[in-house]
Image (cartoon, rainbow, N blue to C red; front, side, top):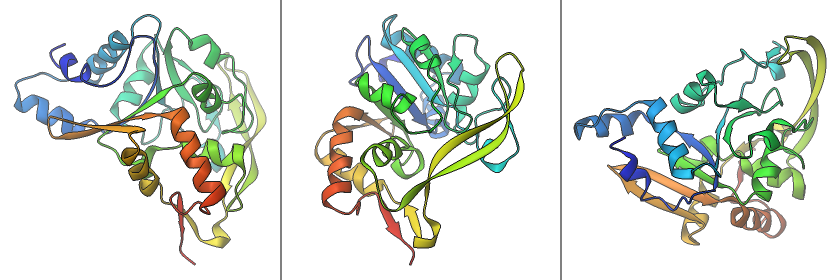
Length: 254
């Protein structure tokens, strides 16, 4: 595709594991101005070619119906507010979905079976997709989207390190699996302590990652791209939790 040359300017290598969070509306508009036809399906295929046969590509497939006791259908519950690329991955046959009913991912590529075999009960625990991304030295690509809206990896660090402003909460609802077997299941989320007035405020830590070049930023056709090394980011987030009272991760309304 003509816009593959723009993606090739990113520090993404053959064989990488790459998680993508995006809002591609402005990118599509700007490409059209350049006379380049744009489509989410072509964008996904271009990313796959960039990673090569040894790479692994992930998109968030988050759906909050289970935690609202509305039930979850592994095959048919769509990603909610995850953007056009996630919606397109949902339709494609070359992606498999991880199993947690709230925080799942669409995955394609070499390590797809490693991610598919995970059966984590707690969303951000060890042996979750987040933990596997950490172990795989994954990168996360942000396309025209703020850290506040999409840097869910932070919650993995919060769970592993342990924070005082979140607590574990169990949710039970109907789960229909890949074989359409329906049963009641219970899964765990690390949720904010609303009584403390905690709100996510991860843009400051994003700026620190940029200053330390752990998040590399690019301007492509007037659109901000940011590429984060998740393993290096873990250390900086951990330090903020342990030594800075998470001041660059959260804020309080009370």
